[in-house]
Length: 166
Image (tube, rainbow, N blue to C red; front, top):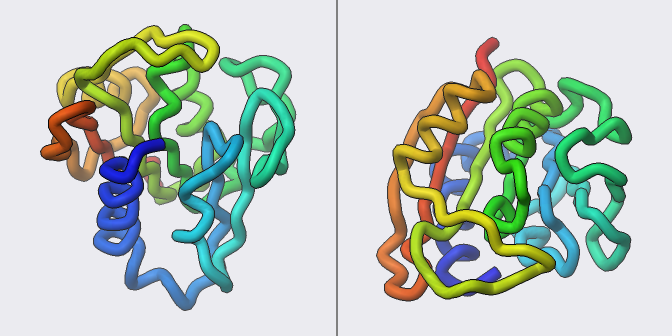
């Protein structure tokens, strides 16, 4: 994760979840190996990291990146992911899993580059533009709240804030 992605996530968390700071929320970070977003989750919020292999800030290791049988549906209030979606072969399946594990009226904040050079970890499959995020919302049943691009000249990250219908 790069600094501009962290800044974008910080702004979106504050803007869309700031009023929820006193309420206990379960927050899942998808792609949390070596997480940079954990500092945004302070008590009474509870942080859970999900990734393909164990490590710092990883609480849930999934065997299949596209089907998270290890995670119960409707179990998180918030799902965040930054600089991860471009590394998944079937990004629409990952966003569908994000929608599945969100509780009704839960919030997803997703960040992915729309430009930038190849950076395998272990693959680098996608660059996602705002229309791509909208398509992922339609596919997964999430309701887009805001979609835009950062001004970072290297990655020009696309930022999505979406909610699961009540």
